[in-house]
Length: 288
Length: 279
Image 1 (cartoon, rainbow over the protein chains, first blue to last red):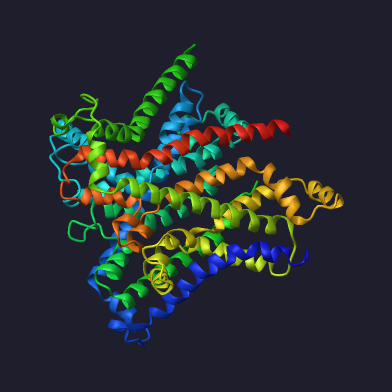
Image 2 (tube, chains in turn green, blue):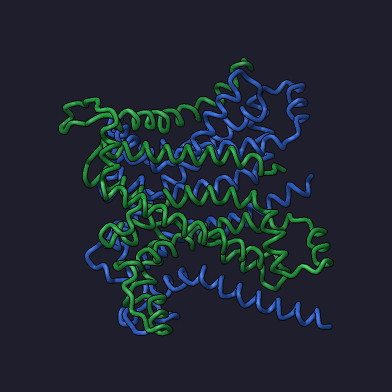
């Protein structure tokens, strides 16, 4: 009996994982090499035609370019600012616990609601942020419907939503930096800048590496809700990233084969990210 | 003397920066709340108001009429609760298997599970999972909104990690007392893991409540949609410029996760410290 216990314990988890993750993933790979005929008339095998088609499609290539730009800016900003804020939040200053709680709040807010909040704040008529820019810089901006401001808007909302998650990890790992190292650096005349960037930042690099990977994944995929609520990929297709493109091709244009090929490309990207994580991450990450 | 004044200015600068940063992170919610209770004439006041000019509940009433918010809340609650419960059931069982048993295929099955971490749900959802739901006849049902999310790798790992910290001697002495594996699991392991279970539940509840893409594509009728999609419905509805109403909906939608976050966060911390004291 005891011999079979672990298998029974694992059964529910594996039924769900296989049925709702692996079976669909396999279906995507198969469908990416098929033409799916309308009205359920079946499918024909067409090899890599779908892939060739999307790589010569300007809209798709644009979404790839936009994804790279958007992910690079948001991840860099989310990492940089969360580290700086965490550096302040480990100091012994009054109210630091309250500050931590307040800054952590967006973690509990969904991307869709984050999108709704910033759509409101950036609204040219009723939005406070929009008013702030007008009052301080005399700028009257249609944030969500003009270039390049729509990019800034989705980037800002994304960083606002992601930064708290990073911050919690940074606070924990900065607090783990041994006091003696910082003391001896002070004795040797290191200033705050040197201590921050030459000592602490390199020491927390394993966590930075982990966060960069997590943020890339979040920005490539969970950004869907922010973009759908704020810009719907517009103006035109200006803020259409790869996941939004996939959604449009699958549900608006009903191109199942093309959409499957896009899913397979996204899976391939994830495999590369995973390999990078394991090849470079395992070496650096210290398990405690 | 000089050092202490320098330290003091350093502290004041940090304090000021932190106040500004905290405001950036919390003000959107406060301004949304203000907007949601603003009387109609103050909604479009220029410059926009930071404090409410009165108390007006009508925006909430309108929001709940314009989209079927009561139904959406019910849906989101059913989904979030059942997903949380389901994930706890599958996750504690699987975590127990990995933490306390040795069996053939352990590391292989573990790697198989781990690999799913790198197949983001969004890729799976859009084409293939949707097609599968069509085959199952689950489109527009609670089944589709709940069952596929009842297990996850993260969930299993967190619980396994925690179970591994519980002393092996407890299991051994339970065995000597004649307790079967499920007795040990239900009567010793789970009660000792309360804090972790609360923590994992918070994460899973927030995750399920905040799902957006899946309910958006798998539900066809308004009565099957969730609160998250409701926000989008409000923004896209004909009276789109009625920001008092939209923010009333937004504030309502964010409330449950914020309550869970604040209330359970303290319980979570408390139970952690309590188990710490007990040693």
